[in-house]
Length: 270
Figure 1 (tube, one colour):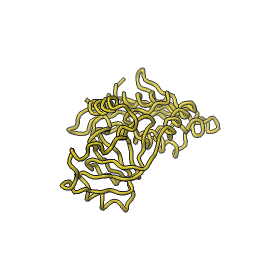
Figure 2 (cartoon, one colour):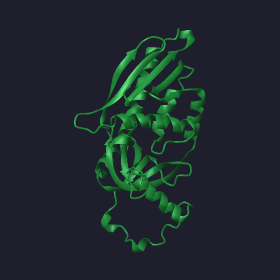
Figure 3 (tube, one colour):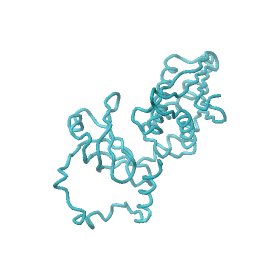
Figure 4 (tube, one colour):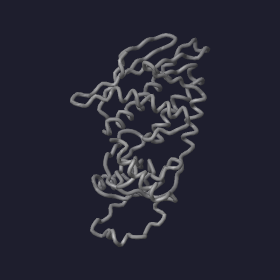
């Protein structure tokens, strides 16, 4: 069996004769596609990813089965095996109530959408690939909900270079690349900010809004952007003048631990 292949097995409810409704099947494939495409972007470090996902096998009946493989787009590197591995690693983390390190709330919520179908829509939903297997259940759904409940939201701001504007879908978002902390932060925004964000593209900016943190993490991983400011870099204060200006920068974390986390965030993708 191909090391890039993911098999999806579905059994409908007994009252439906073990069959699956068209509406559910389409929703399942849409959510599954969204998850693997986002994982493709994470693995390849490209917003649009480098892979095309192909259905390589399709079986109708009870169970119904779909097999999908990730193949590289023309001229792009091949991340098919990495995508498959990361897909199952994500489920494994979620099954223990742990948020995968680089998953945002939207990606975790997509997993929740898949999980909540059992037993309401289908009696069984399973993903497998060789020796890797995850069977969706109410217990797994409870763990995912536990992960989602761990998020802390507070007003604040993030700073960095603005890039990756995407308005093809809901919600619209852009990415900000901060000087410290995570590699990038996803920023969702409403249409009234569009012109200002276009102006800020490829520039250093300050984004204000609701910051989303995972518990015990010092840096936000997502922002609901409410305002964006493009500072005049020539008017910014000097490094010397900043001394002592932010005594609570580490949010109560020991300075050595704070520096260690920054260092790890810089090298974790190497």
